[in-house]
Image (cartoon, rainbow, N blue to C red; front, side, top):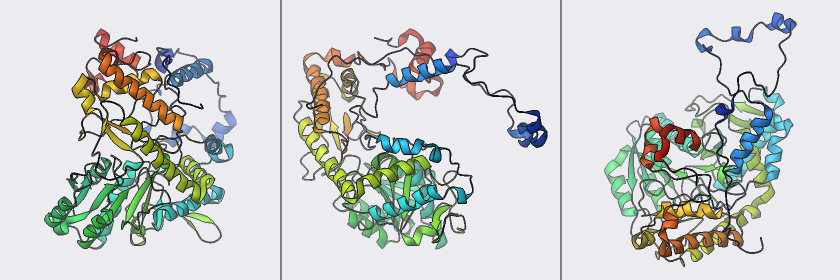
Length: 527
């Protein structure tokens, strides 16, 4: 588009699609597999005989019995109900970087010479895959200043848990067993508190000062009170509200002064690729969500990667195996007696590593720096547009600190004026073809929050379209609030009469259709 265009007549597909199991007809097959020849059975026996009795199923696996045509139709219908999020104006997943994923990278990962490789193959047969791991690790080392990386963690949460495990192994190796406390900040990602807590650490959370920056005086007090029980600090920077901590080096210096280690959550690094590094900020460990920053599809704990890096003195504690090169061949190193173990099977999601490596190679050093520059430019341009909307504000506005790759906005003024809040605005923009934005982690420290991250893949026109949709919804809140409060009107998703039901697992359902069947007419029907 040469100019921003607000889709006022948008209407999302609404197929009222049944669950795949509801399409099932006993005896229907999408493909007929041949019976195993008698000669093969005689040679290798029955496959079921190879399984211990305690892991054999007592009943057949419940799978839908649907022919190919209807399987294809079913999933096409579902994709048409998603607004095409990978290519739509979906800058709305603040803190989690939803960007365009280049089709070239997808094509490479689906190539049969790569896609059918299995991690249990002999290493001599996967030299090319291991070479990609090894070379991408060197790219990550250059970007971060760390000395070694593991791609085993399946997402950011696992990477943070990996950091907590490395931290414990390090302190235990020094017989420093009393270090049982982690410091984090309220605007760091919640996994920076949750993962260490899951690993058994006590967690102290720092709140911001009047500028929105983590309170350095509060840090000094926490360090003094914990003393030699402090294991380290886990923090995101820039934080989830888009503010870069100007005291970050002082934080690291203070924690180091009492024997603690410093972990840098760089899950989305769009703002500083090729600009600043964790090492120079004084950090000992860090991670990148390469399924965010490096142009691969967003996924958590599954088709994803929380690339975990550390400095030399911590490398022996990394999860095993690591990918190494002896000058002649690549190999998997399991000979790591000080390793804390594993956080998942194998050594990382190969398809994600290949896509991220391809993305990095396509951009090069200067291209990645340009990504960072455009991300910050886009964010500041969108900020200027949105703050012109009546009722829209921003957390810690006027604190003298430029926002980086994202902003935490607030519809508090709009809510006080009209009774229309962030959840209502969020649903109304669906009617203009804009996916729901992310508000904030809980609890909402900033009232009626909205967090947007317009990374480098969005054009000036995209930003202006997004602004127009929010502006239209805000104007409607002042002139015709009912149309916003009853939204969405043209979407495949709908509102719940009792949203608190979602906190009750007994009331959950896989699809909207199934939810309606389970709960009846108390919920809004398709509009």
